[in-house]
Image 1 (cartoon, rainbow, N blue to C red):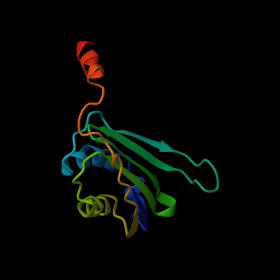
Image 2: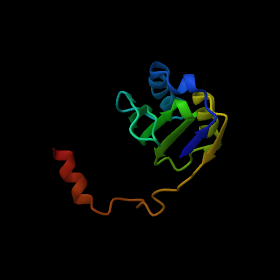
Image 3: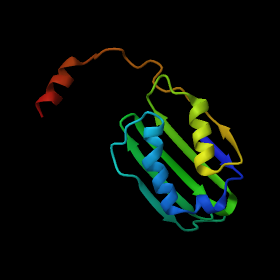
Image 4: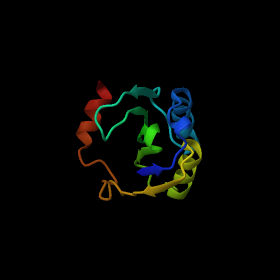
Length: 131
């Protein structure tokens, strides 16, 4: 998870550029998009939320999403993946470059630490193979 500060407000407000990023980022990170990106402009909702753009793309490894706040130069980005060997420095460098972020806080949460190495319910897989 990345919280980006002092980001370029024009980039954070550019719907086309943000959608293009969601087309490019998965492949650049060795991931596989399984949906078209969805990018939506959202107006102001309350004093804390002056509006911006939200976007998401589903990837085989999970999803990549963001919420921009151009008037505040702020973006929050999630790269949610089950890749066990993800190079976090490479990911954050790419996001900093793409979103034109001045500085950032990075929050790494290791998910699935106890993910089974083999099927524990093999009958379930056989049933889903039939449908």
